[in-house]
Image 1 (cartoon, helix red, strand yellow):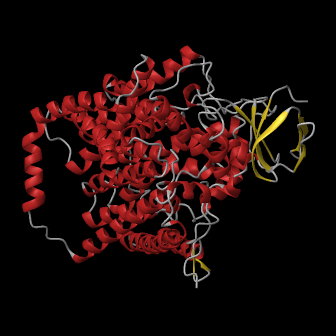
Image 2: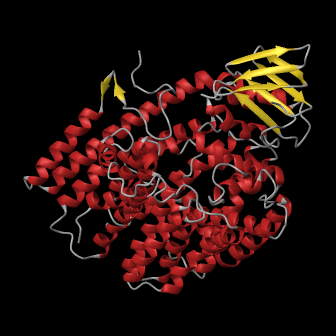
Image 3: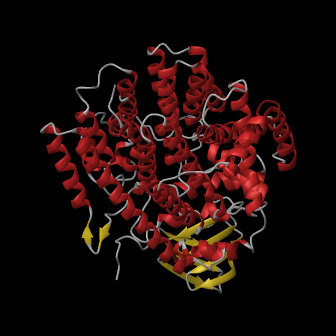
Length: 436
Length: 197
């Protein structure tokens, strides 16, 4: 079953890799340590989108046919463009002598140990947390048994049922695909996808940071990230907040790379990742729009930016046609609009260490420490992005009935978890080098 | 002796974690000191490198602490859950035998047949979690098959085929209700023929 699980995840990865190779026109533009995580992230998003579209046209998910078709397409593309590259990478891995200092070895061992603990804690128990069994994993179960997204409005399991029909479907479909390939509903084993997303993100983070700061600092920060308590905890749950945050983090990292290089390839990657955020959770759409506006202001190519819409349009259009409204809003239902009582709660939430240790402080201190150096450059402009994301949350709580969830402690830390990866890499750069 | 507070899988929830403690000493106090010292040094315009060492050094130190805490957590969870199969794990992670009740009861419910669930009014968790385990049996009101799980009170009148349920919020009487399976004094699978009052 482990092999089948691997196959279930390998196909979207392979497909993602093929797409990236096509986008880069076969040229080696980005390091492998960034390419593979990107392939996994974008591949799983695209793959689940394809499964959703198959459901829309009434096609059941046949694992054999889907694997053969998508696998063949991917292998043909990869074979055409990348076979020599793969051979060289494999040769390098097996023949090159790695001269690694003891401190690096220690850090790598700590990282491996930490990732092992996260993975173990993830798969040693089935889905246990509320939103997972009430929404995400419930829908995954329904989609698995029905071998499709349930589109029958008269059915009790329309769109998988659960609390929020308007929520996007990437992760329920991905989990359902895994059940399909392994041949059973196993809500214990399926949780491994979350540590895998984390591992992919950390590899990407390390590679991205090591291009800009020392390798030792990059390794230290990579270790720190996976040790953030709530990051580690969510990587072993079946919640979607952290994956959403990681998509945002990678998308914004690619955006910075675009601002520095002005290469359209990075802009497209950024747009795809941020667009995929809208296929993960509803607030992802707001983040995509904010980042889109930011990028347009920075004179980014609009056509390239709009590639992100490939993830936004299908689900948004579907909801429009089906008349599915956004849940959990309720402007002024209680008769009040401005909920200032959220502000002290937010402040208190930022001042505690138990979820993110030093992250918020390190970020603010980093800005203060570098204030005289932060001129209008690409990096300092990026600092406004997480603030923009954060203000989206504040806006929602200030003006809608969701403020009750903030007051009762059920959302704030998870919202912060969404912006944490973005804030983290910015913090790493603030402390890792002099700001030019 | 508990070295790390919250190494055991209790008191943690998805919305936030409790403070880590080391030999019962809350580590967040040390983190506040790191922040305070760094801020003072920044304001006093100390070399950025020194401040960087304090921030990153302190942060790495706590990351190592959390890593070892995770190791202890793996140890504890393995002791609690290590040898169990998936059904046993679902049972442990679902309160009060609810999972096994649903699993066993649904064996006697025809495929796709909807069910009604009565349980304690002050325990909405059961009502919320039931769909996850009961699929493909949707939960509706006034179904023919009724699951009764630990309401406040259950009274059975076998002669009249009546079952009275007190959920703590409402009092219901099921008429022409036959008990298909009794799991305990307050846990039943029931089938009724007529509308209940």
